[in-house]
Length: 124
Image (cartoon, rainbow, N blue to C red):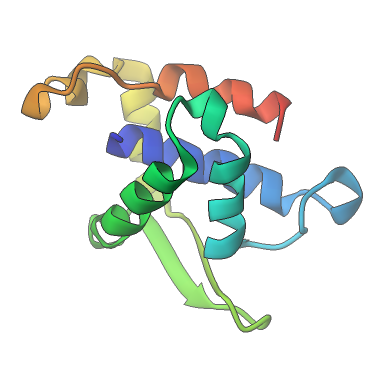
């Protein structure tokens, strides 16, 4: 899973989670359990088993925070919240504009599904 895919998935999950409860969201910042549920709900559209998506994201979460692309904080609900930072949004926008070739050729990576992921907005 590329970092481009991960950042885009976080952004899409944030949009869904921030929606009011009446529209299917939770009306608050994203939590890890809700994010993992979002991945599980869309695993077939993403083309990977949910267990793979969970492992990939959890194993690379620290790198995303170290790069300054995701910020975490303690929530009042007892769960940690997280969100894309301005730097994360800027990086995501750069990859969206420049295309996947800017990151896809590293380590022989053949595919990046990020361009197809915005379809999840329709089914979140």
